[in-house]
Length: 517
Image (cartoon, rainbow, N blue to C red; front, top):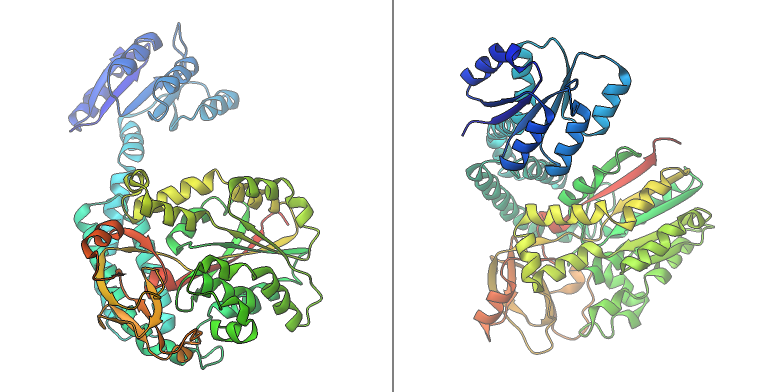
């Protein structure tokens, strides 16, 4: 279908050669001689683009522009004028024109403007598709080359970048990318099953940075670099979501992003406690046994001691700093912090935990409306971006950009879209999570999970005799044989965490430095 263009100019007859030129190029032109007729047609018909003369009798171009935007705010408008006055140009740009041309214009200039506005997305998608297909073989070869942990960071970063760039592209190409992503996660699961236990016995830099290393490796080095340092942990944030949030922050900050690996299970009671304590869960259980005595019950209670764990970690490092800790569960709590953010700058170190993305993950599992709004990874990413754009957290970032601060932004774990079920056998005291479980002598499909029969080798608490852990790989989720179909239907295509996938384990950690300081 050809693009439809409305051209309003009181000297439209003089532009006949331009119109014929564009029609020969496949565009459908509708010419009018005044602003009133242009507005009437915009109300009645669908146009892809409007060319608008700035100096017309009756309704001039700027007035017509304002009224067009009231009718169709997203309709691209190109202003054409004889005037080069800066004030007119600023008024037009302020009214959100898509381009600005000075008369006399030639046909090729008009054609280039049309292509830049209407074909930019198509041309960009075609170029991106071409580039991805060119890199497909090399990326596949990298996945199949027995990559080490550093190379897996590179693979995941590349796949995520392509997922973001191609999200509105050809469906066939997206399927190719999704297949390659799944292939990568299959190999990644084998890699973690083979290598993870060895990491727990190694020291840096022979292994990757893990959850217990975050404070020491990223936060403490910033304490002497600014008046105040902030750790902002966004619970359950994936790397692709951080790329969305980052778009709002580059105006205010220089951002240096690296990656670390979450410990297993990639779930808040384990990974976030490890971050704030600097300890593996087994060591936390030995040092603070009261934290784990009710582990088979409400796991959220296991994170109640984060402020104390953080304070003791700082004391163990002989740091003369008293950490300030805040957890944000509700919008009102975020608003209170945003309104008082200048007061927090008086503290040497502040740690904020924002739970919204994690809440969104769990809410989507139970809400048909949210599944409709965010039907896939791309939709869920867009939903998270919309939250951030209107969040108190963004307000906090903007306020802090005016201060001499350093900000470390990270997460405790990510989430994966779970599309395949696998059966698990366990007793009634088995934990309820879908991507990991612990209990007495759990059994499951070995191809779908990592089985930790000796929890201590995974630096995990044993809790009870004969306890073992299982971690789902790829996009599997665990279901008991009883009421199998019921829970299969309930949990299929939900975002979950706790297992061993790239999305859950490979996590961004960014250091932000205000540009104006």
